[in-house]
Length: 260
Image (cartoon, rainbow, N blue to C red; front, side):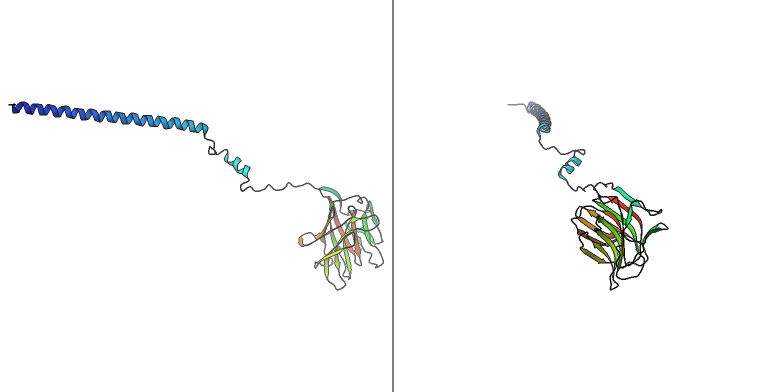
């Protein structure tokens, strides 16, 4: 028959051994978990290194993003066209006389106080004056201050351009019709007439611009964009000058510029 006291001692020793085993098992489990996490971390780290070396589509850095935008033309604003430097062919301010290399086809042309006047108003007179060294000019813009100085109707005063040696050429002119209507007119070297209403003031100067490039012609009053007239021609060269018909014309500050 067992002694109760010895039995009690035995039970206490058994419980102590069981507690120690539980602690050991918990420590071993924790150690195993730590080791497992370390293995997983090492594996992912190695995989990351491998992928960084073989992944074919890396995200662009800050330095490469602008190159990508430029390559695909995303929101690209086109650069403005470079300004082309035009070449001055001829300029005349009419501050002295006689005028070298100018030819008039009627009397009444004279330089007075720095202005070139055409005062011949006879109906049967060809009242023109041209610069004789520009007959070979092809593509250019001609500008001058033009004044219709009297109220006669019909009448006109204006620029000559692409003028030929035989007297035929284009005209960009201020004109008053027989009805009294005032307008800007473009006459091509072939004789085609285009017009737009322009209520110019008698005795006031307006800057006219005639442009001839290849077969394209234009005529306008500088500062009045709605007056621009356009036409075409087969005459590819010719000089510049002035004309007045049935009115005194005043002309100044002639500039001829070569077009590219």
